[in-house]
Length: 333
Image (cartoon, rainbow, N blue to C red; front, side):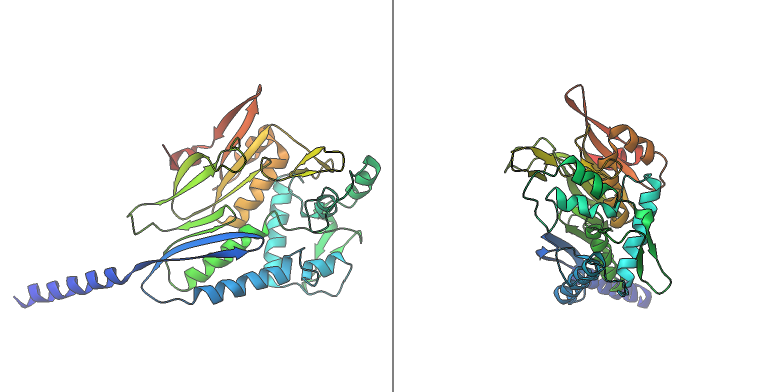
């Protein structure tokens, strides 16, 4: 009898603890975009102050839009800047993807980003070929070196570093680390379309459902290409269908810059959605794939461990889809 009573009390306590775990959410603006976070916790976490601190640290370290950030000072020629651990982490991840992609992912395209009007310095006139060629001489991540005392050495002083193609994914990973340290096992963090899904959606007792944008969606109308069920994975999507720039003559330049040619180019790849173990890698690989084009992107993703991709490309004028086996497993109708 006592055993049954003890079991009943224990079960009641367990159910009571489970009922205390409630759905919580927070959203706002940061890093030039929106963020939305949903998590389950039986504790009252000070999430907003933590987020504000994280975004401030990331901006102070790597924002090219902040004139006094570490990266801006380095770009301005300050050789005495000692970068923080976040800068080091992004630098090392960038080096990895730069080497694996054979230079298609290259954060030293910053001068070209600005020339085409995609960065903080808005371009006013169409950049001519001679000017672009001169800027292309400043491209090459292998011309950067991280010293033992965390300083950045440039082989060519005019190199301009731009981590915007990977820093957003890294910021998501830092937020995820905060929740992990607090013992939160179930959460979905989304920042500007990139995300990390940990555990499950306990409200629905299911994996987290997320969507892939349709690259042919009409302006002002959000439509989706597919739905995924994710658990313990990160996803980032890059595409040349949203961001573009118009020069003074009305010519359109797509967002993706090819570091090997120094030109903003349009290739057969409309969008690349990447799954990886963290959002830093997912973000970086998605950017690399877009610069590489369809065939080279497929060749690379098939060589990578724990990386899956959903590529929308154009074949004879019609959009088609390539998916890795791992990505196919999480797709839902």
